[in-house]
Image 1 (cartoon, rainbow, N blue to C red):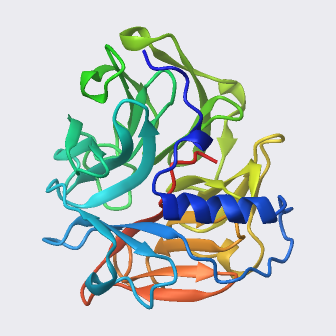
Image 2 (image 1 turned 30 degrees about the horizontal axis):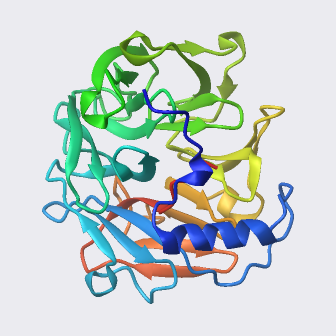
Image 3 (image 1 turned 45 degrees about the horizontal axis):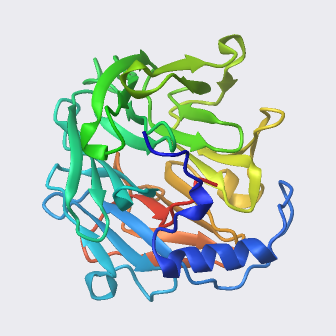
Amino acid sequence: MEQRESAQDAPAEEAAEASVGAAEASVDAQELGETVDAAATSYRVLVTRVDKGNDRVMEFDSTAPDFTSRNVKWELRPGWGDVLEARCRHISTDGDLVLVAAGDSPSKGRVGIYQRKSKKLLWSAAVTNYPHSIERVPGVGAVIVAGAGTARPGEGKPRPNGSLHLYGPKDKHIASLGYIGSYPLQEAHGVLWDPQYELLWAIGRTEVRRYRVKGTYRGMRLEEVDAAHRIRIGGNGHDIQPDYTDKHRLLLTDSNHVYALDKRTLKVQALPGALGNKRHVKSIARHASGQYMWAGVPDGVDSAFGGPAVHFESPGATRNLDKGGVTYKARIATNSYQ
């Protein structure tokens, strides 16, 4: 088994990490509601595409004039349908990684882990309940996948059979991962490892749960923390991400709001201003400079997945995709967990 890794010691790509590190050194943790006057910081961004036939992961500089093919810095085409998640991680044996979850329908999902530089597929697994997110726990090497569920029994009704899937390695290599077990979570949409609190955070339809990862290798298991006091949200939870300005805060989205969650008090509060009341935000991120980045369904558009642009606030900007492009998630391209 690999030695316990530090997320801060494993840069994804020198340009992205240098930007994050420099900004972190100059930005204090900010309280909810504090005004941020951020400069237009440059950092790398991963964008997932879900427009049929063009499904892929694309990397851009955040200050590019638009997120079109002419400005792509790196690209990956898994060939598994709609790309619903992509994030950067690192392992000492295989280097920088890109974790991907994709699928065109609830029964035809797949997750995988690629070596970033070579684009070599190191491991993949079929997931038959619509995988929407994937995370890797450093040290023990566990991989957790959020499966949103199987087909809806009717329009507007929750998907049944949502769950978290746990995979564990036999040795220090990604390729040795194997399925261990699943844990029910209605419409599971997002998972995030928190190295500070040593918790796995997971968001489902109406709640956020916390888990400890216990054991090693194929003997690992998830153990829920304080199940009697799960964190409630309004409904249709979508995303859960770190706030890179504050290690004690997470960012959440559901169909009606964007929230901040205080990890110390477990209090959830909508962000101030228009962003906090933004509907149908599929992904949220906050760079260490204080700039927010989000992707979602534009008001008045009939789409279950996303829209034609990635948006930034403080300072504000919109980066349009190629004509006909639809993005589901936008991630900061860093290996750092927080």
